[in-house]
Length: 75
Image (cartoon, rainbow, N blue to C red; front, side, top):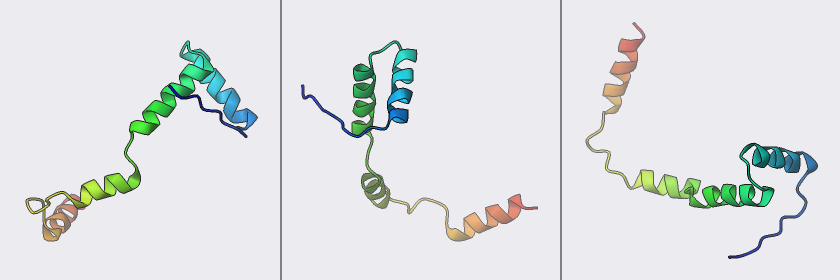
């Protein structure tokens, strides 16, 4: 397992993380490690956009269907 050193973290951020770690009953190191693990599993915006571009939308509503639904809801 790797060791990371993070520099130039503001006092406010450090204190907020310490409080969250304490509330979770964890050490600061364990808490931040868990948050980094969550962050690493999230897709990037580019990955989400690529996934959305790759979807088949041929079975979805047309622009006319959407406009009709909006107009119906505004009545």
